[in-house]
Structure formats: structure tokens, C-alpha cells
Image (cartoon, rainbow, N blue to C red; front, top):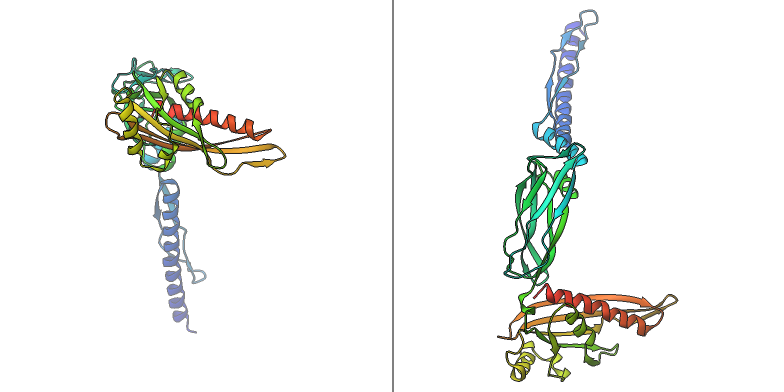
Amino acid sequence: MKLQELKNLLFVSAAFFLVASCATTSNTASSAEEADNTIITDITEEIEQDTSSGSKVRKEPKPISVQNTSNQQETEFKELLKKIDIKVVSSPKTTMVDKAFSVPYIINVSDENGGIADLDITVTWPVGRSNNTLTYSSTQIKTDVSGNAIFSAAVPKFAVKDVVTFYPSPVSSSSNIVKAAYEAAVTAQYAVKSNYINYPGGVLYVYDFNEKGKAGSNNFTMLQTLRNSGVNVGNSPISDTSYFEKPVYDLYKATYDIVGKAYKFMVIGSFKYAEPSIETEEGTTVKLTADITCVDMNNGNVIYKTIFSESVTDKNKWNAEQKCRKILAEKAADAIVYGM
């Protein structure tokens, strides 16, 4: 092969290698940018002629890294989260629907040097419910020179037992930043009792069923648990258990015809076996389900529904069943007070 032809071939090969290498470098830079939000700039030197051997020599690209501002903010935010301590200084006690909380919520944010001023804090709290599903709202508050931040909740319009959550406001919408911020959160109780439990209270039609599915008597444990919670309740004047097979309104109407507006609400419910009891070497396991419906005695409207299960294992079936019914009664009473 002639010397000039050889030079031309080497030149074409070198050019092809340069194009392929630049493409690879570009892809690598793109991946690096996605991984750590760093901007990569490539500066490639020209190909020079090595006159001694007649071959082409390519000098490697020189990457220049420029720190992304948002990435630096995220790094600083993560470092801040490691150093600070957030605590609830004070929070209001339980209130009633349509009654303002007695005092505001106060939190404090500090590090080893004391309170941290001018830090944005995100607050979330429940603002609505549909049966057992809650919806939330959020706002931002800022710490003062002492590191304290104050949140005054609006007058509650529905019954609920949940929490108010406080956490440092994320500096970006990046999922790992939001997650890190929320992991630093603190909570305080947000408890609002139903105004239906005010005097004159309610009437109960809540029955225990045995393992064979037969209704027994009105649930005394449930009645006593509600009374211990400060709620005035009495047993329904209706003893016919066939109403469990009828629409809720039929039972309401039959009860209303007897008691009229003597009560504000009615609880209709059952404690039934969710599955057959199971005997093992450790004892007998009983699983029961509570199905609760609350009705407004003024109009028969259903104002709250909930259903949940509990299981207990004890040395014999009777013990397990009684303990399980007690747990269900306590949870049901709490759900009624903070759910209606």
C-alpha cells in the first residue's frame, strides 16, 4: 500500500474513533447528571500528527464539573436534619365539634447551639372525613429567635382522633428530600369529640352473636364502656333481632315510634365471629368482627359507619372470647365518640 493511502486510512480510522468516543463520553455525562445532579462539560483537544511514526494521537476529553445549586441546597438540608432536634412544647387537650381548641400548638427546633430561627416548618392536620377516610390540609409556619413556632388550629367542624404533624419544609420536591424531611417529623394529638354525645345521649341496639351465628343479648360491655367514657346511653326498647335482616331505617322508625326525640343518636351493631375458633397447643384463638352504624335520631340518617376485627388467643375459648369482646367494645366506643 502506498504511503499516502496509508495516511488517509489512518486519518479516517482516527476520525471514526473520535466520534464514537465523544458519543460514549456524552452518554456517561448524562448518566452522571441524572445520578447526582452535577452538570458535566467536556472539552476535547484537537488530534495532532505524530511525525515520527505517521500515526494519529488523540488526547482524552477533560471533564469540568459544575455543582448544581439545587443539589447543594439538598445536601445542606440533609446535613441540617442530622443536627436539629424538634419537640412539641405544648398542645391543646381534647375539644368538641364547633368548639375552639383552648391553646395553640407550640413546637421548638434546636441544635447544639440552641434554638434555630427562621426555619420553615410544614404543618399538616385533618380537615375532613368520609367514614374512616381522612383528608388533610397543610400550611407553613416559621421559627422565631428562640426556635419556637406556633400553630393555631381552626375551630373543628367534625369529630376525629388523629394527629397534627410538624416537619422541616423540604427544599425541593425530590422524593428522597421529602422522605428525609418527613422522617424528622413530630406529632401531637388532634382530638375532637362528636357533639352527638352531648345530653341526652343515645340508645344502643348492639348484639353479641355466638359462634353458630345466633344473636344473644344486647352488649352490656359496650353499654358500660360508653358510659365510662362519659356518654349517656341506654339499651334499645326493641328486642326483636330480626331487624338485623332489615334496612336500618326500619329499626330507626320502630325505635323512634317508642322513644321519639328522647335521644340524639342510635347505635346499631353486632359482634360476630369472623371465622371459626382455632384450637392449638398454645390455646384457643377467637376472631370477632364489630360492625357499627350510627343513626341521627332526628331524621334517621346514617352519620357514621365502621367495621373492624380483633383476635385473641387464650388458654380456653371462653376466656379468649370475653377478652376479644372487651377489646372490640373499647375500640367501638372510641370510634363512636370520635367518629359520629
